[in-house]
Amino acid sequence: MAPAASAPLLDATEPWIRWNWVGGHVDLILGDLGQHVELTVIAVGAGLLIAIPIGVLAWRYRGSRAPVLGLAGAVYTIPSLALFALLVPWTGLTVLTAEIGLVSYTLLILVRNIVVGLDGVPAEVRDAALGMGYRPLRQLLRVELPLALPVIIAGLRIATVTTIGLITITALIGEGGLGQLLYDGLQRDFRTPLVVGSVLSVALAVVADLSLALVQRLLTPWRTA
Amino acid sequence: MSFLGRVVHWFLDPAHWHGDFGIPNRVEEHVVMSLVATGAALLIALPIGLTLGHFGRGGALAINISNVGRALPSFAILVIAVQLVGIGPKPAFLALVALAVPPIMTNSFVGMRDVSPDLRDAARGLGMSDLRVLLRVELPNALPVVMAGVRTAGVQVVATATLAALVGWGGLGRFIIDGFSQLDYVQVFAGALLVVVLSAVAELSLALLQWALTPAGIRSAAAADRGHAVRATAPVAEPAT
Image (cartoon, rainbow over all chains, first blue to last red; front, side, top):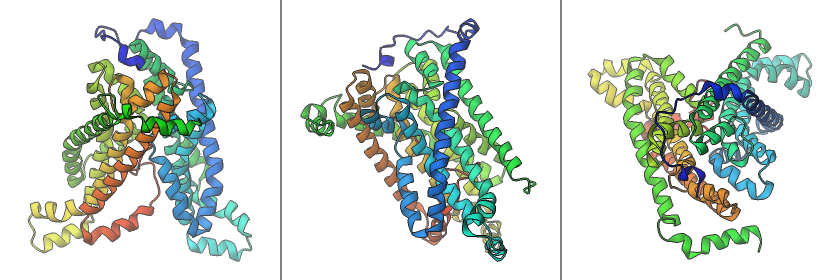
């Protein structure tokens, strides 16, 4: 029997937020928020570290592109609750389980945008770099990746916002950041943590998205738009 | 017996194939709920998105709705829906509709707006009335993008219907959620496999539908579009939550 199914009647007069509960649980809320940020940073950071070499290789060796993107796409269609459920028997109710799932979801978005971003580098720019005597690695690092940055960061923004949403689900396996507030509110039929968890989760997504947009502007000063 | 052996056993157990708690009934609940919710979302989102796109108005609205939709976790929508209408099928339905509307609305807007003005001009030059331009030129050309939105929405609805087990509704999520509360990981794993298969079936059927509904003349152009990047404002399949 699911815990929520046993919840009896809802009290419609319960206010949406009780500020005294919020005041009394600041440490708990900040702790959950902190864990949410931590899980997000690890997932997106690890996702990026894995996606860059895969993306670059899939871009260089065209034959590998379809299988790489196909595999990432297949993982992407697995519902998150099912993906975590498939992992739990092997890796337990741990942060590792949560992160394996979260990183897998970032890979499709990141790899695809890295490939497309690199594809978008104009051929004449690459010719010019070659003519100036750039070796392939230096050309990749100094010319191609910087020019692909806007598209890569666009992918990073989507991956980050998506991850922040997905972490609410990982509360079910005990590692949920703000999702724990949602789950707690659901089980006790208590609205305040639901509202606090939802609002903070959305706010975190918006702040992360805007910060990454700002990072993109700072990293690509040659783009005035 | 190994873990996977026990999972196979779980599937072979006839008790899991009968009655209200059996696999067939859970699949049926899941599929019916997904179809009804996606259908309701279509009724709401298509007219609004197509109209706004036809007139080229309200772009910021249509695109922002989809961005907000991405930031709002489906679990949060679900638990808030419970507070509004109680546990059971109702909050699941409401949350699924709320999830499915943004991708359909955004894509129908973008699909209509991005029909090439040259095509519209050519159709008018041929003497087509406004209504005929709309029905014979704009809609067929917008269709691949509109259907991509429907596909995204449908796949996400099937995925999120799994979560609805958390709010006291049935569907395939029951096996996962009940398995977790009973610490029965065989059931959890078996339920997850069923969900994966159903999502794959949903994805493939919608892809087939998209292909079948796309007029032959623009199929190749649509195929060439597939390699596009995921951009912050572009409609993109979301991981199903």
